[in-house]
Length: 306
Image (cartoon, rainbow, N blue to C red; front, top):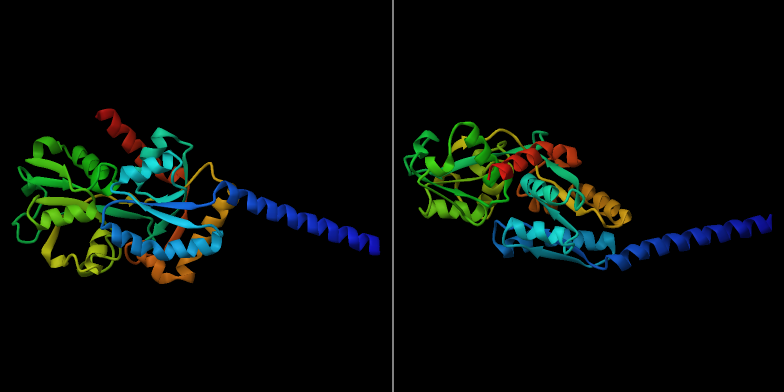
C-alpha cells in the first residue's frame, strides 16, 4: 500500500511538473502579449479606455501585456500579419482583408452582442443638422467623407450598397475622401470640410445618447458631439459585428486562456467591458470564420472591381 501511495504521489508530481513545464513553454515563446488598437479616435483616449483590459489580462496570463495603437486600420492588420501583434479587435472588413491575404493568419474568437441580442450593427450617413440636406437624394453633387479604406461601416458596406442602388460614388458626389477614422470624419463634417460622412452605430437604444453603442455614442460620452448637431439621412442593412482575433500560430493554451478570460470580463469588470466596446452591449458571443463569409465575399468582389 505504501509503495502504491508513493507511486501515485510520484506520478502526480510528474504530472504537475509536466503541466508547469508546459505552462512555462508558452510563456517562453510569448513573453509579451501585444494588443493592437485600431485607429479612428484620439490615441490617448484609446490607451486610457483599454488600460483596464491590459491590467485584466496581465493578471490572468502572467506575462506583460502591451497596447499598440495604430494611426489607421491597416497598421493593426499588418501588425497581425507580420507577427508583431498577438491580439486585436477588428471590423468585419479588416478581418476579411487579413483573411484574403492569409487565411491562416488569425482566428476570430468572439464578437459583441448588442443590447437587443443581435450580432450586428449599421453604417449610417450623417450631415450637419443645419446643412439643409435631409436625404441621400439631396447629397447628389455634395461631398462625402468615408472613415477608413479598411473600415466595414466607414467604407466597404456603404460603397457596396450605394453601388447596388445604382449610385457611382465618384460620379454622384462632388468629392469623396477619407477622414482618417470615424471620429475624425465626424469632426470634419461638423467643421464644414465635407457635407456628409459615414460611421457605425448599433442602431438601438436612445438616439439622443448616440444609441447604445458605436462611434456616435463614444463621441457623445466624451462630450465631443451633441446628437442635435447632426442628422442621419441613410442607414445600411445589418452588418456583422467585428471580431476579436488572435494569431493562429500562438500556443493553444494561450488562446484558451485569452478566450476564457475575456468571456468573463463583462461579469468581473463591467465598466471595463463597456469602455472597450464603445458603449453598452449585452456581452460577448463566440464566433468562427464562417460568420464573416458574406463580408469576405463582399471584399473579394470589391477588390476584383477595383
